[in-house]
Amino acid sequence: MAKHKIAVIGVGKIAVDQHLPVIDKSRDFEVAATVSGRGVQHRDLPVFKTAAELYTAMPEVKLVAICTPPGVRHAYVREAIDAGKHVLMEKPPTPTISELDDLVAYAKKKKRILFQTWHSRYNEAVDATRKILKKNGLRTARIDWRESVRKWHPGQDWVWEPGGFGVCDPGINALSIFTKVVPFPVFVEKAHLKFPANRQTPVDVEIVFKSGEAHQPQMSAGFNWLEESGEIWTIRFETLKGDELKLEKGGTVLRINGNVTIENPSEEYEQIYAHFAKLLRKGKSEVSDAPLRLVADAFLLGARENVEEFHW
Ligand code: NAP
Image (tube, rainbow, N blue to C red; front, side, top):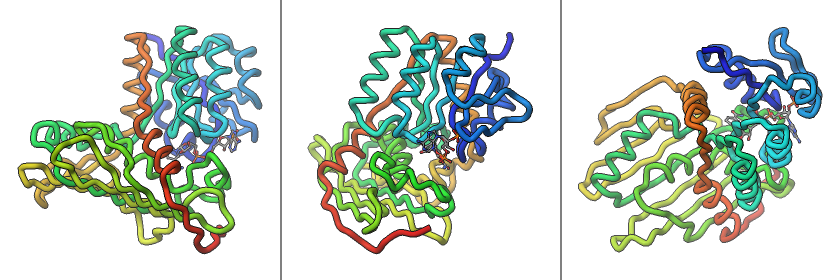
């Protein structure tokens, strides 16, 4: 079968690191063009300054992957749907829940497929953790998500602007795993957000979660963006049977009671595109708003503290 032609909108770090090379290797998709305000071309393929130019020039391209920062994504998705495209969106989907709700309703109304991705969910170790917690219950959970903003978002000032999420940009990846594997709804009980005095988004966040479960599981998260010793992307769970499950390296490794039981290289974006192909075949959209709701609630409930200025 012929490959789906897809255009990539917003050719920044994640488009270059993952989307373009992964689509190039895909058996389901091929890159047809890029849309880049700075004019970043992929191989010798057409590049357009705006999505509108792409839609006029290449009507045969029916799919777009939107890899911009979240703040501008609502407008890009609406425009793509209006042009009759099916859409794959990077995470976090939008800066507000109301914008995401609108996109879900709009895609449904216009009968377009909307796939809102959470890349960290696409790991065998995450699926295995979900199954074990469903069977054996959850007593405690602790998320530690620490990385260097200088390494992962070099010079990207949008992450520090309102709607840029700050350290919740990576932290929401942990929450995307957390909300997938915990077998009951979780809520923010309290949060503490530290903002660099010269920035609009937090550099460090602590969250305590609660649930409606009678046994009151203890659950918390800590996100930090100034970790220069390497990434710490870990979630520890204790089941009601007393086993310790530890998801490491962003969800690619599962250790049970100290023993590595699953360890895979990260193929998150390969899995995302394979899943998109499946959704297209089935004619189904997929959106999960639970991680965004937790971040929004942390911002609503969180105590705020100003800390040392951040400079690149
Ligand atoms: P980035 O390097 O800043 O790239 C975003 C690109 O979007 C820009 O290069 C620009 O591309 C385009 N763009 C359109 N409107 C823009 C605006 N108003 N401000 C800034 N850029 C605009 O960011 P990124 O790291 O690729 O992140 C993009 C999305 O992917 C974010 O939602 C992020 O959470 C997610 N993500 C990032 C990583 C990572 O490792 N950094 C990992 C997973 C997911 P053109 O100049 O080509 O138009």
